[in-house]
Structures are given as structure tokens and as C-alpha cells.
Image: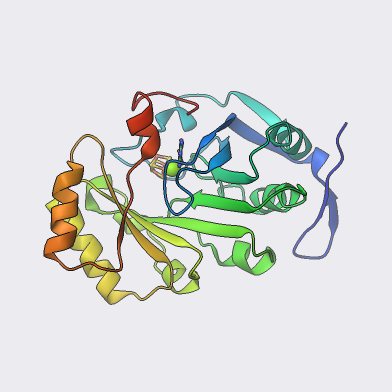
Length: 241
Ligand SMILES: Nc1nc2[nH]cc(C(=O)O)c2c(=O)[nH]1
Ligand code: SF4
Ligand SMILES: [Mg+2]
């Protein structure tokens, strides 16, 4: 069996074949979002989430659905290695839900020699500090959501994440309405961050042309429109793309 050992925060060396994580899917496609959009990327989708956003498009990644299988970190790395893409998107669900186990997975994936980028799609309700402090690699980037009122999860947001993020990181606002847009503008004015702000329309309720017009009307030169390419290329409800 494939052996991957990682050093944990306390300095202990851990054999990752003893660490298991509930999985939804591993697949290769092009990244649909953010600065990596359009690049071939391997997606590693973990099962489980601590939020329940009203407009969630991955409801199959938490109960009452079930994990597709439980995999050891060694098995996950072995499967990712079968693909040729040098970029990885770690997503969910919420991929940082499992604390030290999530960190061990990230460290194990970083051992893939051909890796050029590992970005983590996290929901804004997990403190990224322990991960940033214990994982020291220029290849790791954090894509952090800020959940706006339409999501129903705004009160769970950890605002201290804003100041932690660096210029290679991204701060994503999924915008479903005028109310969401106004709140995103307010939040960006109040909390400073070095991360690139992304405005992404909720597929069902916010026409992209309307979001663009709002961005232009408000002179948001520092904000990037984030279209989900995978929903344009494939059926918006398709899985594994
Ligand atoms: N192509 C593609 N790009 C994505 N970017 C983020 C995704 C996600 O589900 O987190 C995703 C996804 O599911 N597919
Ligand atoms: S954080 Fe992501 S996976 Fe979890 S409920 Fe919200 S949109 Fe869905
Ligand atoms: Mg996501």
C-alpha cells in the first residue's frame, strides 16, 4: 500500500494510512471558479458540512445523504496521483471540518512532486488560522466564502479570517439578491483583507448581467466577477464536472 507520512503541528510523524476521511468524489475537470478558472484540476470533495446554505449546490455532500466511501489519506493521494493535472481543488462540503485530519490530508497532497497549486474551498465558518500557521507551503491557497443573508448562515461567519488572508487567497461572496450585494459591499468596506474579492451570482436568482451592472454602478474596480464555468459548460445540476 502507498505510504505517506506527514509531520503534525506538535512535531509528531503520522502515517496517514491510519487516518480516514469520508469522501464524496475525486475527479478531474477544469476549475470553474476563481483565479484558477479554466485550468485542468483534480477535485477532492470531502463529505460533511457545518453549514446548510439555502442555495447550496452540493447537497449530496452532507446528511441525509451518505458518504460514497471512507478513504485513508494514502488512498486519496494514490487516486489523485493517477491524474495528470498539476492543480488540486480541495472542496466539499467543508474540507476543513476534520481539523488535524484535514491538515494531514493537505500535507500529504503537498508531497505530490508535480503539484503546482493546491486551493482549498472553505465556507467561512472555520477558522483558517491553525491551518495557515501549521502548513507552510507557497502552493497552498485559501478560497474563503463570506455567506451573505440569503444563505441563512451569516451569523456563523468568522470575520478574523479576513485579516489572515494573503494576496494569493480569494474571498468569495455568493450573491443572490440586491440585499446580498449591498451587504457584500458593506462588509468589504468594513473589514480589510489582502485577498482578491470575488462576486459570484446565485445561479437561480441573480442574472449575471444584473450583477455586472451593480458592480459597475458601484465602481467596484477591485472586485472580480466569478462565473461558475462548470455550470455554463455542463448541465448546472451535473455532478463530477
Ligand atoms: N469545475 C468545477 N469547478 C469548481 N470550483 C469549485 C467547485 C466546488 O464544488 O467547490 C467546483 C466544481 O464542482 N466543479
Ligand atoms: S458551506 Fe458549501 S457545502 Fe456547506 S451548505 Fe453552504 S454551500 Fe453547501
Ligand atoms: Mg463549494
